[in-house]
Length: 80
Length: 194
Image (tube, rainbow over all chains, first blue to last red):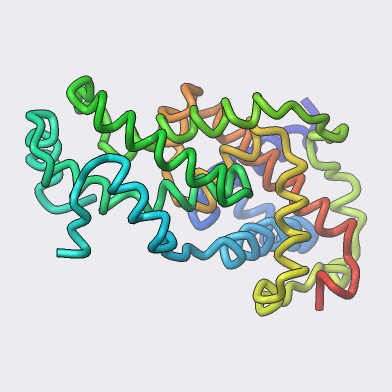
């Protein structure tokens, strides 16, 4: 297996995990020596952060909540 | 997770309406939000929300407690959303979800790093572009990205909800993240980046 392929597998495993989890030692060592990989990982992190910011949760509109409780024939505890 | 959630679930299973209402009140925001992320249309998200909680009311007695109630609800909601997406078949563009090109990465000058202006997410047009890019992903990748990165579920929970192995979940997540990054890099218009 080529060195690049091996590194790919490690980066792949890392990037499919929690982005703030500690990467494996070998990968960390590589990252310290490889600014390009560091940039790549930062860009992935920032892409995720961008989507998270764009997706910040808003409350369900009141009309939607009301209809839901009415359909389920339940009292909405928020309105007690 | 709610305080005393197990007890509330038990009561709901016995038909206690107040307990059911508390569960609905606790989780309906997240499920509606999931509907919007997956289906984009408010009406579709509302339909998904109603179907999910109707299923909760009808089938809560079948909940065995092998997972948390919200994982169970996410599973119901995700299945409903995926069914809805299937009922409106569309052609996904060919997406080269390959391994990242590490040669390309290593040839790149570090000064070329994409810069992100996070404030731009407040701009409607920009958000629309982000959504369109996300929507290009086939549902199997998009769903993993939404559950893991936007709803902060763990790999284990996501795998359980989607009936996948954890390693499969990681691979799908990585491919989704990589695709989105590449696509944003391709777009690199003044509108998108600093």
